[in-house]
Length: 476
Image (cartoon, rainbow, N blue to C red; front, top):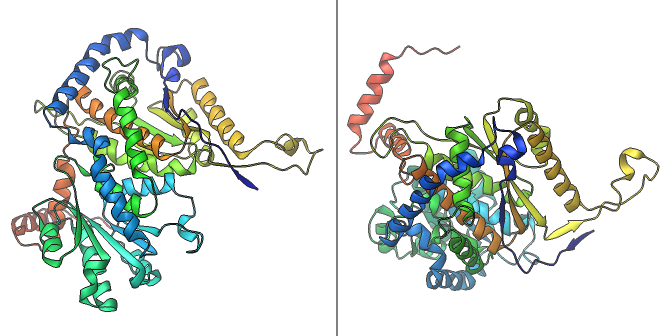
């Protein structure tokens, strides 16, 4: 029988980097105090530069924890609106979707969508972050249009995937409820004054929320992009910002010994550039945190995977992020991590107190392989599994660290997400690249526009056709 646990009163997350160091895994793969000291001036200069950029208004994502008035407005809208609907559908992709999925997984019950209306205190959440036609059609089949609110998210309003889904949703409402119902069933999150979606929202009278200037999609979880759908499905977004503010205060120190994001970035930088650790595995030991790892993959990959340095040199930088789930992936990935190429760092996410726990019953007291489990809880078991995997990884001289959450709550998730965002921004400057652009993604968007016949991209379409004609296809 599941029982609820009392929450900690001092829910501050911690960063344990012991097993990144030579004292735990040896000097060949571990980071020495001398290496940390040698890199320290570079890390502190990176911190100073980010502080200066923030003061100059160049890093607006860092000020999001203090947008309390905006968050209160969103919470008020959500409270008055959510009761009218059974379903909230987010239409977005990448940073316009992954943060919402992460918050839902972490902060709502695992089977939130499966509860009936009497037991579920907030609408179900669906996030359409792909353009798979079967999935989209199947979703529409299960939605009652009268009880469904669509939230379309695109700053420019020109994202092909999102706007295609918007056109389908708009037609769905018009066809089933009539044209006048569109403004009551679609909410837009977009630019304050320009772009296709802004024009549509203004002309059709859609309620809209603002994607702030200067905040890229992968850093937007604490803007209306993530806060609006979170609030609509019952998540306390003010506590989320409160947690982010707690981490922001910790990250104001220029000392890595006091600033967990700076220490984490410094260590990953040394591991990548000095130890050849080109892969970072994030491995939460909690299903609720599984999608934090998915959100982090975009944040780390899109921010740090760059061809050019800030001074224009070809560097092809980046550390590949991989997600895993404990204890599940102990039985699929851990063998590689233990004995395969030593080219990875492992970042564990550990939860000290689960919101609910389940006691393991007895029943086979004379069976040695089962009797030891009786009387323990699943919380104890998953923590033991995490510790055991960490021990085995460390014994095999594999660098690893652990972010420890005393509990899973809006405040601790706010701390965690903000820490990872700041760490990523530090890592960008440590690598001397721009962590806030994404030219590779933009190149793919342009090619997609050309292939779909968008006006103004005829030249690129011709180039693609010409390039394709030169290649001899090899298909069997």
